[in-house]
Image (cartoon, rainbow, N blue to C red; front, side, top):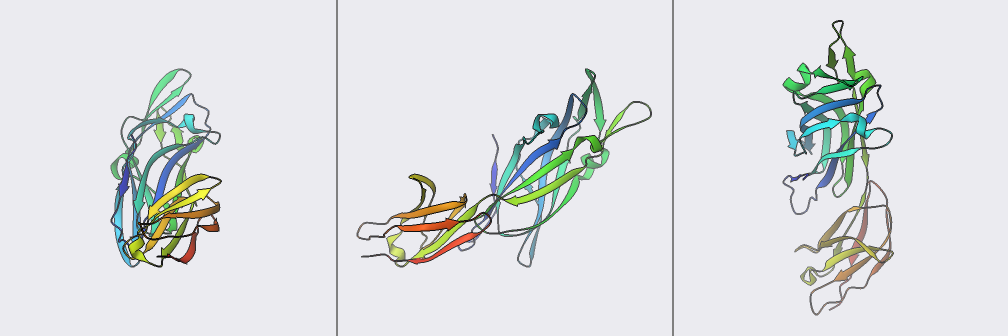
Length: 246
C-alpha cells in the first residue's frame, strides 16, 4: 500500500500535495528492471530551508518498459508546506537488471546507489493545490554497454512538474456555525471540508470546473448555497466571506 506523509503546517497555512510518478520512453530491450528504494525532495518554506525530506514510496523493482506510451505509475505522495521545491533525489538499490534476447544482465549503478541521483525541479507549491512530479526515464540513453559485454545504468531522467488541481478558499461570517462545506459538480460531491474556529475553510485538490458550494452548519444557523464557483488548475479560487443567517 502506498503511504502519504504529512509534514507540519499551521492551521492557517494549508499544505500542498505532491505526487511522484514514474514513466519511461521506449527502449530496445525486453525488460529494464530498476530497484527504487527511496525518493527525497529538497524543499523550503519562506526563508526557511527544510532540507532533504523523504517521501514514503512503494519500494521495489519496477520494469520501466511497463510504463511507456503514456503509461505511468505512482511511486508515492506527500503533503507539505507551500513553498519552493528545488530538487528531487532518487536512490536505487542493487537489484537492477536488463533482459535482452531472453538473457538477464546485471546493471551496475554505483553513483546512484551511494548518494542518489539528484534532479533539478525548481517549482513553487501553492497551498491547497495538487502537483505531480513525473520522473521520465530515457532508457535508450540510460544504458551503456561496456567492451566486455556488461551493462551500466547511468540514469537520464527528466523531472516534469505540473499542477493537477485547484482549490476553493473562503470564510463564514459566524465561526460558531462550524459548517461542513461541500464542493458539488453536477450533483456529485467532489470535495468536503469543515470551517475552522476562525470560520476559514479550504477545499483542496479540486479538479477544474464550475461548482456549487453547499453548507451544513450547526443547528440554529442557515447558509445559502454559493453557485458558479469557477476553479482553474493551479489556482486557489477565493469566494470571500459567506453570510451565515441566525
